[in-house]
Length: 142
Image (cartoon, rainbow, N blue to C red; front, top):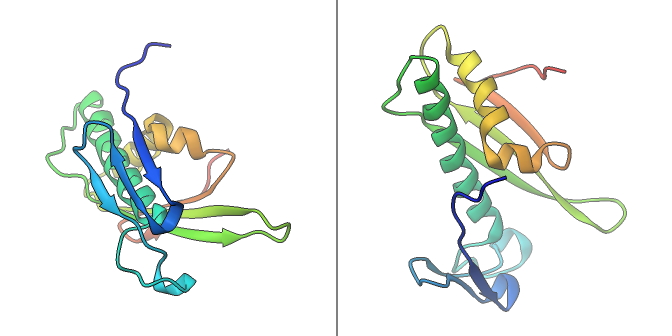
C-alpha cells in the first residue's frame, strides 16, 4: 500500500468538547444532540461521519464516471447516519446513501463507486449501508 494523504485530529471531552485538526484548518465545537439529551449547540460525530462519507462518495462517483468515459461535473450524495444501540450494550451505525445522478450508466457508476470509496470499504462488513439512486433503493449484490 502507498499512503496518499495523512491528517490528524484531536478531540477534547468527547461529545461535549471540541475537535480540531493539527493544522487548525478544522475547528468545531461538539455537543450532544438534543435527541440524546444534550443542548445541540455544536456538531456531533454522526454529523461529521455523514458529511465525510457524502463528500468521499461524491468524489468516488466523479472518479468512476471519469474512468468510464462519462465525466460528471456534479454528483450529489445525501448521507443519513443513524446511531444504533445494540442489545449487548455496544453501539453501531446504519448509513443510507442516496445518490442523484441521471443517465443510463448511473447505477453502474454508483455500484463501482461503492467498491472504490474508502469510506465504503472501511464500513463494509461492519456497518449496515443502504444505497439508493434517485430515491430508489438499489438491491444488494452478492
